[in-house]
Image 1 (cartoon, rainbow, N blue to C red):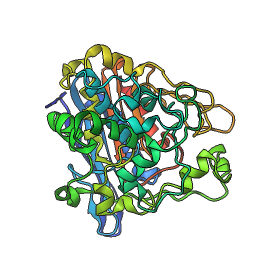
Image 2: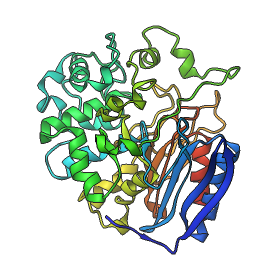
Image 3: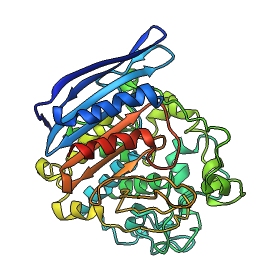
Image 4: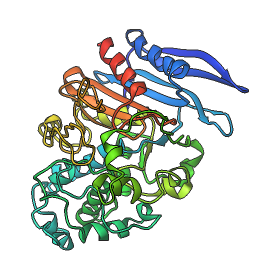
Length: 411
């Protein structure tokens, strides 16, 4: 899918020098959306951005496509137009689309028992669990109780076997609790059993390829030179711990099992060849802002539904399915559609929980550290942001939110 540029103009701005490397922003920006470019540049000068990209599509036309900073601090390599990076949980939106595409083709019934195609999954009270419960994070398998091996996330067969044998933390469908990593393995196994291809191959063949996106779940080795390594976030001292982190100190809690029982991929493997080749449907997607915005732009009316998902199905992506005042995993209010995060405005709530401030009709997904992609059908808006230096929080941090806010102001 090729999108036109809406009278966007070349944009280049030198910001600073870091050692022998010039920090600059390049790309294109429509004059109406200059506020996005200004906010993007400000992230480098005042908010410790290292390397990043931002892309905005409005009414089917690219109005912002910017990149800047350093892709690799070790070498000083600048972020280029085709630089890509791991976007963590922003991958979940891509994985959800794979399930929806199979459903649209009549190959998968989202409301039928998963055990119909995966009989072993029925064990321990999961016989009535459905694919829709995977999408809205209500299936009750946010983590795994058994002690997992260090390289667990790069071994999907191992994870799938553990999930089939796991007892849910609550009756499937009765509570919402974010599934940080297990969502991808559950969805991936369903796709394999229904279609025959793995998640990575299905996404490449049926979504990324037809849309012309630089977006992979399982990065081909030939693309490795374009990758910007992730700069892992280091918590700031003297900041009061969140309820999530407090609960993570309790052995056996969902929060504790997530933090301490998912191997070393997020801390070490994410910046290795094997880690980026791994098909982790909830976390290992590799793309840039253009890839995120392009995927969501394909779900807006001007694109004409190139994936064939169906306008009626897409219209329901913003319907709240898993709205709760106390997410069983994140321990804060959350709101999910069928595979997507929806608006979560938690400003002013006790404990200072995190937010995702987007339009009320918007749907998308954030990634750990701050990456985000979403579509807002009411405003004809598709948005993507990807970066190297991870930021704080569980949802969208101030760098990404500043760009989203600027895009909405421009409308």
